[in-house]
Image 1 (tube, rainbow, N blue to C red):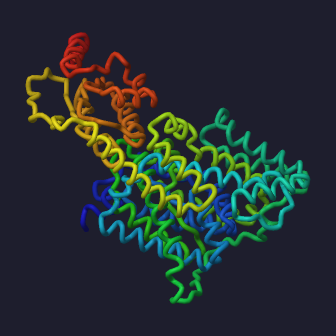
Image 2: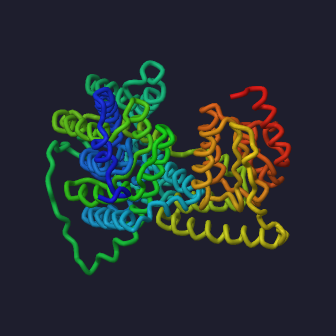
Image 3: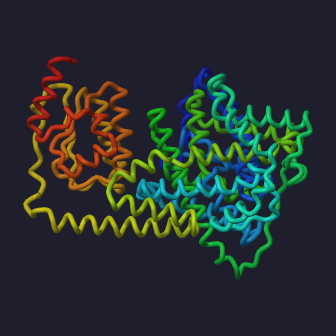
Length: 548
């Protein structure tokens, strides 16, 4: 098997997994399985489908993504990002339309992987990702108000503004019990970690709140009163469709594929940084694709890599795909044995959990940080955000990508006009005279979303072999928020390893952007010099004071 497509599990099994690591993976998988239970149910309900579809997705897709994926620690399953898409597809095309769209999206993802397009998805700029993620968070929050307040509304409109108009006119039907349950769920989810970090707050909230509601016979809507029984069996089914209408599902399928691909690879990159590993992006896309082709036939919904559950896996000691497989098996056992009890969960409790999820998804800190940046990034961010909330996620992604490209071309054209022609890069310099422990890396050209990951990886690799790293930025005309985001993560990684970082030749515009994003304070203003000679002298002084 070509190494680029070989699942990580197969590679690790060949090299051998220690008994200690196996035990650690099993423990991590069980913990993540427990965490995934309330989320899987909540995501399905919020998507407008029955709760068991979320469980089936977490079991089937979660197993396939770990078994065939290109990441050591990726946890797959239903995620909040898909809620808006699934809800819209079900409303327009029905459940059969969702199945067809999901299967088609899986085939698109497999094609992306086989064509080795995994690395191309990194060209989605950071403002675009934050824009539609924050937009999705706002939309998810808006869909939970009905259950959070226990409002007596038979059918909600899909449009954001009209939804809030309906809430306003029905506010007098608020169920005080539902409001208290929602508030209690949010508080337990957020603050239970002060008591225990081993058991997730959402799980504690569901157990505690459901018990109180049943014991006191509190009059609120539950999963049972809304959906009926939760099946604890799997069944294989084929959708009914007219082959002449397949073209209708191309747009939703492409949206699922793009969003799923970006989110899964983003999750894999984040987890790579946590365990100092490298995932296989194309293998990961193929695994995501296979999961989305297979899962719908068993009653599941779209799946992708889940950043929060993946991070929890890492924090609990998971280091191989075995943890993800155990997570799926844990959910399977819970579904087979305890599904009949899940029907007792109050809808207001699920609303509380999803409100916390939407808050965590909002990335408001990144949102505010980008608003402090360049006008180009702000335009992409706000356009994508507003289109996601008020129009459609598909339109938001399409326009966001085109807008990012056009603004980048405009930015490059402006540089071409303003920059003297003699800015040609100098002849390659010889740094062999540098003292041991001091390394130099030069960034030449724009530090932007297309080059950000590559530059950051090289900086990290060189820096980890050094004691002091000087980054020359004399030929960097501008830096965008994607590069700043990646640069910040790289700096933190190097500093955690005790490496000192110096910048030289930073122009006023770039320095201003670094300052706005608080990177200058992270590095230290005294470590940002206006020339390489000054930076080298400063590095030698540091090296002399703290020799290797």
